[in-house]
Length: 290
Image (cartoon, rainbow, N blue to C red):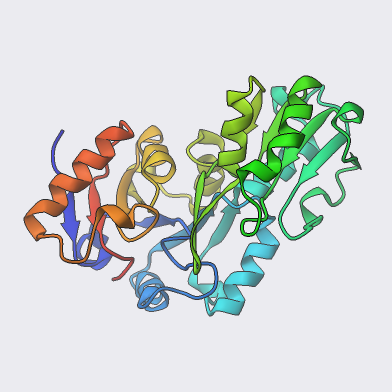
């Protein structure tokens, strides 16, 4: 495997691409505030005529994500569109075009964050806390902190005993936050699979959510650069679509890249870590800067 090219800023390769697909958490912000230089980087991309789609494995709806970005100082005009895995799951449950959802039923055990019910708004679902009275589990978010995986174990065991499929609208297992790394819905879904349950995922690295980005960007895949901090989802997802990718080192994998790591070790460390996930970024960058 060839070594990825280490970048000082995205501007150094911008001429090769007409559009960027950017992850959010760990790339643009930590859930509370933008990372230094990120807002300026987006402005520079726009000034250079680049199209931008924000893509996130967030179980929440797109509107809520747009509102949060606006509150953090990301103006709506700094990107062309926003795609969330939560929106993709909501559309899937509304339209039932996905073969996995055709005969799913309409009674659900909802696992969500901060009691967010917008994820089921206008879906016509009947919510219950009793897996024996449900047709499926809808995993849209987790309350971490304070809850841990152990807190969700009882409902997972009951749902597995009832033979329920689980819809996971955020495949991420770890989330970057201002409080450090937290468990994400993908961790809960993985545990359900360990128990023998069926899980239907929406989000990166699966192809449909990237096709939603292509609908927004209207740019050939070979002219798009995907930027993300998850080798398992962002980088692997880009590879699956035939798109170039740039790995952000100071995201969920930051522990592997201490600030005092000698430059000659960076490319080797990126390659070695990427090999664990059976993928390969074309580039790597410490933080999202121009």
